[in-house]
Length: 286
Image (cartoon, rainbow, N blue to C red; front, top):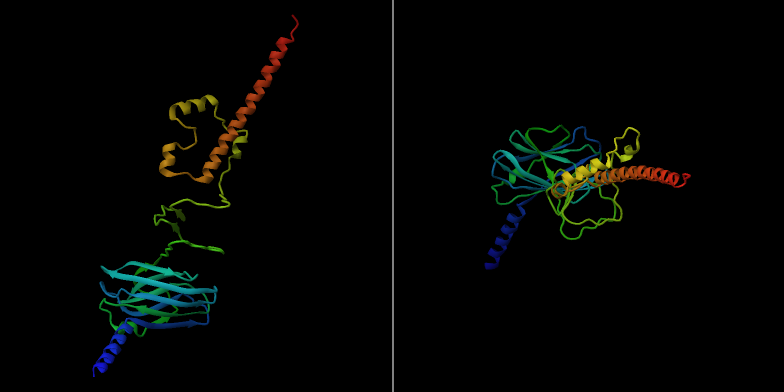
């Protein structure tokens, strides 16, 4: 009898555990969507419930990419609070969450042909009901509803990350930092590379144009005495605060080299002229 109750208990336990994960949708379309893929869920747009994790797994034949998306969100104060998405595959479309007549919609803003994927959901401990994970549908239609929120992609790697092929990223990349400061690539640490190519413009060949106003050495000397650094070059304090742009700095340094070259050429001419005059004085008949 005891074994019987244990068996019933384990069966109920398995049913409860299984009830937290749901196979909610299978999608396939042998064509090209006109608008995108709108996933109509039965999840109510309610604050404080359903911390859902959606997994979207499949294949995009049109781009020959693996679909492996993990989507999370939480509804707080009637907004989608801190939604995020990560991709374990190469397929990274724009994904939005909306409130469509009181139900959550997941809109994939992509129009690639011959796609197929399945959607599974996990939810536990936030008042969810099994009926919320039934009857989900998809439609090729524009994004529906209100409270639209584009989901931010977040992928973090710890340890050694090795890429032996090509890395294509159309967003921002932070290595060792999440503070991008407006840059597409931010690295908190040292960088080692075999070659770095910087496209800098304009290149200071304009120094050699006839209408270029070459600063005199006296003007440069005065600036150094007054400011403590070369004109046109950032000060040590500026570099400490803002860093330097490699391409821009190389251009500025080349500009100074070209200006110095012009001064040296002029000094060489003056030197030759002085030698001629000195020789003329030496060779003048007494």
